[in-house]
Length: 115
Image 1: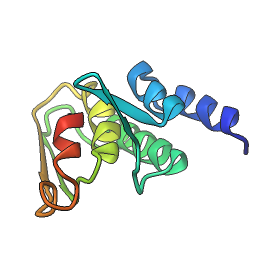
Image 2: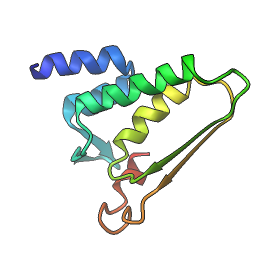
Image 3: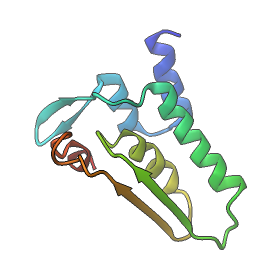
Image 4: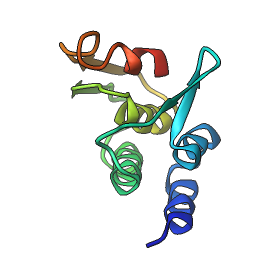
């Protein structure tokens, strides 16, 4: 699959212009500075996370259920973007917690800035 096909997959399965631009430019603009996306999450994994979250919310959670997610490891926040992009459609209470003891040291807070 070439890069344009990958971008087409992002457009189709993630359906978010901001996220599409992050993958197209392979980075974020934060405080007027371009920050290269150096994520361990590739395009295919991003599409997978997005699609699985969407299907789970549509098919497995009852309308009255709260949704609780714990993500361990934050890095650039790429997977968190995928989760939250789909969770915005879930109408009930949602609790999303992220634990990353290395966010400020190893990642220099980039995941928090991206958010």
